Image 1 (cartoon, rainbow, N blue to C red):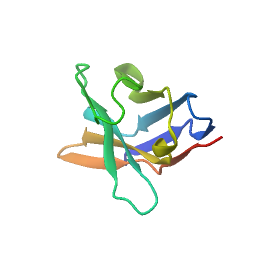
Image 2 (tube, rainbow, N blue to C red):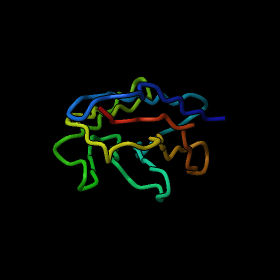
Image 3 (cartoon, one colour):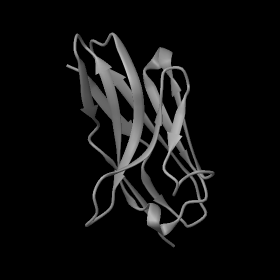
Length: 118
């Protein structure tokens, strides 16, 4: 069974920074891609950023230039550095990974709350 464990959420002031981490564990042949999604109250879950094992990245327009996604393939870990945070970044952030365990399966983390407020 594959597990995704997130850490690093919390409270930040507008203009501040937070860093999220997500570590995958379990029996895995490969993970591609890994990424972050978020869901604000009353809204649908939306893509924040994804990264392939080769380092290719994709960002939502709303976070380009402020957020940076990275990964450590040896540790099966993905990171999200969030700078210049805005109140509209407040949401539950979910880690996502497509994992080859035989077939390709999609996994989600439990979610971590990010609140941006003064």
